Length: 169
Ligand SMILES: [Zn+2]
Image (cartoon, rainbow, N blue to C red; front, side, top):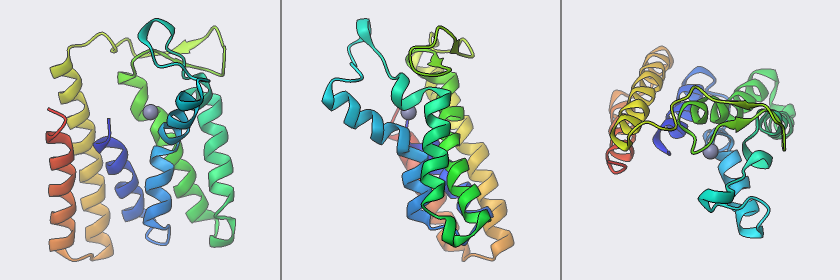
């Protein structure tokens, strides 16, 4: 899923305008970037029977990624660090309900976290994502209004988000 992660970064940007938009976007997708690298290296096999993504997507390693990535922005102040760190953590929260497999507490942990939804149909999965995008877009719009950002920019951003979600149909 892409649109909910984009929407999370935008919602954070509207609440912490000092945080660089690119940092928030990269942070919101960081576990997937790491996953792509580890999958290419064969560390995290993607075949359904042997699927494994504990290094990129477990709660502990996502939290570690959040801390390390946020630390890169320590010169920009606590608020920016917090926003960037939350962006990375949001990846775990948004993946949790609809990940291909339950997410591990830490790599090779016997404990896996799940809301029991990975078995839902593709259509239900899409609607669930659309709901997440709508909620996060609402947070973004409210924050953007407080920041007095140009309405056409905010509207264009919302259209882009909706389009991103629609192409996943
Ligand atoms: Zn992910």
